[in-house]
Length: 349
Image 1 (cartoon, rainbow, N blue to C red):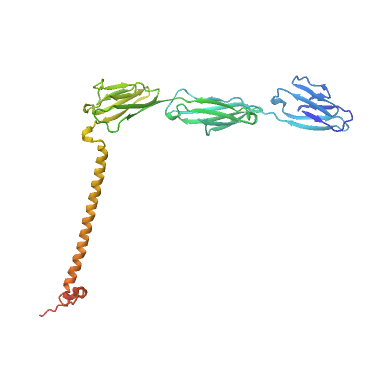
Image 2 (image 1 turned 180 degrees about the vertical axis):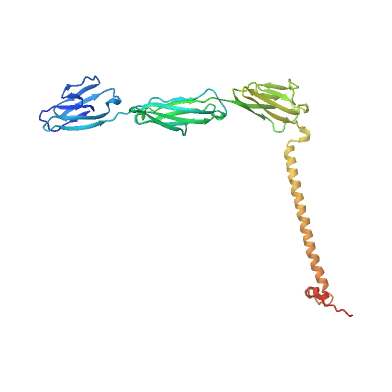
């Protein structure tokens, strides 16, 4: 801290702390504090330094020039409380799928109060913040409630402290969540339309924690009948050369201490001679063509009947007036006029 004066009649300068204790009077040290040292002293300047600053050093410092009257200048020293590295509590290892857990992040010693931010795999999520004063510093807590599912397995939850005193070296703590869950099973196949003589691989894709190894393969509710052609390696069931006897329902079962899951695959081996190279495609195309032909025929029949009905009406009307008409137009007019002819009949009593 430096105090300067432009015009001085050889009067000493003095630095005092917030409790009005004299630190230096000119070049003479007045307070026994090894942290406070003299940097420069002259008639126009008094500069001192304070090392290992604490929160107790905060306050108003006064530089005085003992003239008549005494002249003073004041400067307020603000000391930041550096927050401690945050700690995360409430993490149970392992957590079970479906559990509700609360993660709590806490940091002490900040001034002003720090801000806590949560991240899940580097994506920020919102927590509930609470601030408590402890003397001149603050204790900040942020809680995060989670409904644990299998997608949280291996997720990294990070609590980061934001504070003006940590612009260059941010403080943060990361915990990785481990979740145990029951397995889920899915069977994938290497062929869409397996044919006799082909190689087929079925894979039991099972995901669970702990890992459900090994898996169990069965056929039609019993053991695999031909272990020379049906080879089980890990989660894979392979057929070296398919034949009709392989038809049936194959099941894969996976288990861990949390549960059991299974999946089924119905195998039907096609005859390559009857199927043709692209038999399924030909059958589909044939079905579409048949539908189109049927719809077209229905439209033709309907149109033909409609035209025939109107043509018959024209000929009938023309015939009604043709007896006494010189031409076809007159015949139609006469026919329309005759519609009321029957109403003019005379009756004799």
